[in-house]
Length: 151
Image (cartoon, helix red, strand yellow):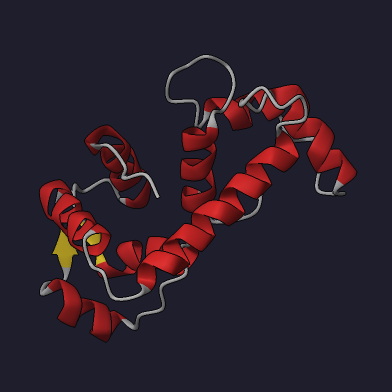
């Protein structure tokens, strides 16, 4: 799995910081961990983290410690990455390495998950960090890890 850049970690931090107070509570952090396959109780997480909330630099340190932790979780993380790449390819209909709003809408319609009230362009825009109007794999991965409900 490719490590995330500090800018990507900052984006994730901002999305997780629901109340925008500059700190991630253990509950906010646990949302991300649960979505990436880690299961902790709040008490276990507090014991692991050592405090009840994290600022951005502490969140980055926590990420680094998880990334560098070699206790067998690497296979699970690589499996998640592989699953996300497979999902990305489902949406990348023309195989150019990007998901356009048209591809997103087409696939969601085929899956029976499209609601006419949705706007595929705004869905793309929400996670399009380089503002090119489409999602590359990193942006798609961030979207999938940050989205609380299916798109």
